[in-house]
Length: 479
Image (cartoon, rainbow, N blue to C red; front, side):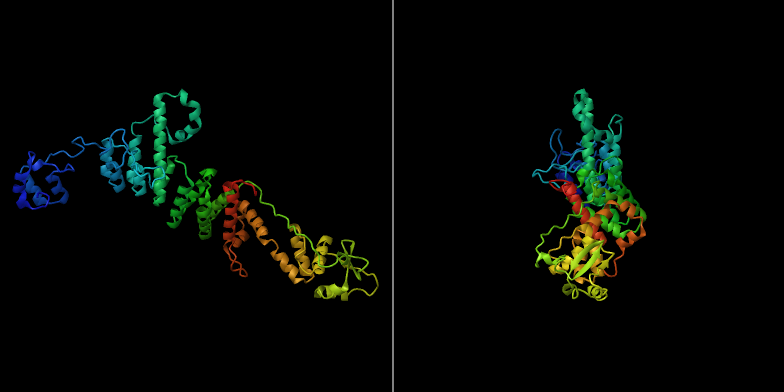
């Protein structure tokens, strides 16, 4: 009756109340006067005061209510504490009041079914403030834990404890051990908060936590970088790219390939800033690793000639001789005359004297042999071409006007050759990115090849490299 706001019912309601009368409290510990004040109902407030309501009635904390709500000492917490709720709501004044009364920001909420959205299994006040972007509340929570604790270990010291813990546990006093455990609990809480701030796009809070010495995870770094890129925050992008070297190689997971590389190459594609391009080049080279570029595997095919092998370079059956690198090569006019216009011209312009050799001065003997094998075998199926011979054979095919052989050389093992070139680019990108021709290659699509995307090809090659070095069962086996 009193909460309905009707002033004409006050007297009747007072007569129905218990021994506390007008100052009776609800299950939430609120008096009718408190409810009227919350609603801003001045008429009801005046009526209650006239009826004898106690204006000095204590609030929950003043009445010695537990600052942690229903949480009991030594018990797991399955509901949010008042500090957690205030931190999530961003109520700075209430957070300050609760902290002054001794509320613990480290208390988190457990989940009875074992399912939680938090990687560490709970959501404490740090995480809630960070997830909702309440930077002032988060800083207040941090400052409270630092008060009056001159002996508290720094986060750097806490991180170093992992390597010394096994050696020095026996030498530590109980108070020092408690200090280490408390420090590690805080580090865990801040890591959790860092995760939630990055997930919800609150980069400033993430940077604040990082400045305390909390190490990056690949996920938090990528999410922070993504947010900065979407918000066009160039200074923060540069700062985050510089921090990539702080990420441990153990963090190089599948996420780096599926989410990290597309984001990094998207930034490179969109940003023509010199500093950012240089920083990205450093990251790509670091990801490519110190190992050498994978060697091109030799092309091995069995030769199965369709013609009698005696016809090829056979002196007894030959009617024309070529002189290549001082060595004679015996051939047949009937085959060469119809092979191409170049061979027809060479044979037609041959001196009339018998046994006159046609000198080929600009082609190596082994390359000329491949050309003849192509002609005598009637195709490229049975050619055994080394990778080191491809370019020279291509040049010879152009000279002798053998279009099919030329086309074969252009496409011969192009994926492996392209991968080698892309590997060279990635391994030396820090230097190459300074060169204008290289920038043109990256950013400008060749007019004759509209489907060419060099950046996309580099991304794929780097992904394969990371997979082989860091993620495969036999790491580095293809390096």
